[in-house]
Image 1 (cartoon, rainbow, N blue to C red):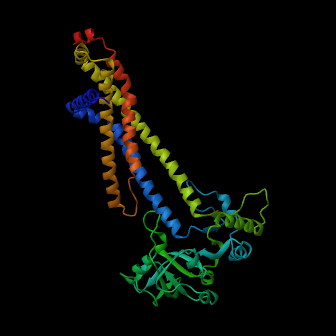
Image 2: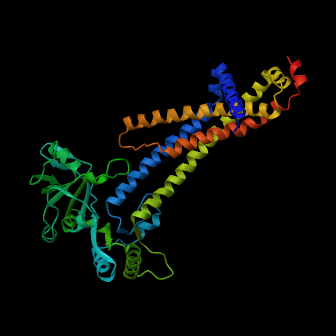
Image 3: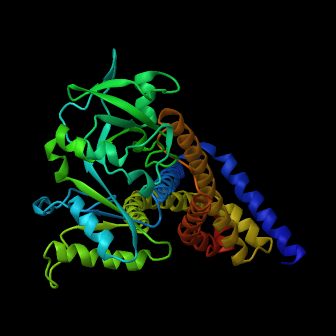
Length: 419
C-alpha cells in the first residue's frame, strides 16, 4: 500500500471512530445484538472447551489401551436411553475370563459391579458420608484402570475369595469421615448394617467431567462381598479389558467376536452390548458438543441478524443526516470508492466495537462462573476470540454495503441542496 493510500485509510478510520463517539448511546444500542451474539458464542465455546479437556484427562487416566464392555450403551449422550436396552442380558465375570483366554491381543480383564442400595450411607462414629459410589471389583481392577493407593493397600484375591468385609475408599470419602488428611486405614466403619474395615485410601484423580473426578467418591469392596451385600450387584457388571500396547484395534475386534459368540448374536444382528474406548468416548462427547455448539450458533445468529439490521438502519439514517457532508466531500474531489470506504469502515467499526464488548463480557462471565461454580471448567480458547472478532467484522461488512453504496450514489449537486 502506498504512503498516500495508508494515510487515506488512517484518515477514513479516524473519521469513522469520530462519528461513533459523537453518537455513543445510539451506537451502543445499535450493536447490542452483536454484543449478545458474540457473548453467547464465546461463553459456550469456553465451557465446552474446558469440559472437553477434563473429559480427555479423565478418560486417558483410566488407560488409553482399555476397552470398556457393558450390556448398556456407555459414554456421554443426548436424550434418554433406548428402553429396549434394558432387555439385554447383563455381562458376567465369566465373559471376562473367556475374553482373557480367547482374545490373544488382550493383556488382562478386570470386572466391576455397581452396588445398588437405597441407603448408601457409610458411618464412622457421628460422621456420615451419603454420596458414595459403591462398586464391587476384582482384585486386578486397580492395575487395569490405573488407580493408585495413597494409604494402605488395595483389595486382594484372598479378600475376594473369602468375601471379607473390607473397603478401599476414595479421598473425598476419607476426608469426610476421618477429617483433613483422611487417614482412615485400619479403622472400622459401618455400612449396610454391618462393620467394614478400611484397608486402603485411593490417590486423588486428576481428571473429571466438571473439574472434579467422581472416582474420588468411590468405595470399592471385593466382588463376592458385594454380591452378599447386594445380591443384584452382579446384574450390572462392567468389564475393563486392557489390550497389549499397539494392539487396541485388533483387541477390539477379538473382544467383540468373543462376546457375540458367547451371547449367541447372529451375524445379521447388531451386538447386544457396548464396547467403548478412550477415543470413542471422546468422539461421543465431541458429537454432543457439536450439537450444543449448533444451538449456540443458532441463538447467536439471531442476535447477530438483529444487530446487523440495526447497524444497516442506523447507517441509512446516518447517510440521510450527512447528505450535505457527502456533497461537500464529492465537490472537493472525493471519489465513489472513497465514500463507500468511509461508510463501510464506520459500519465495521460499529460492529467491531460490539464484538470487543461481547468478548470482554464473556471474559467477565467466565471468571464469574469460575468463582461461583469452581467445578465448572470455563477456559476461553483463542480461536473463539478470533472467531468472535471476525464474525463482528463480517456483520459490519455485510450490512454496511447497502448504506455505503447509497451514500456513494448521491448526486453532489442535489446533496449540497439537501436540508
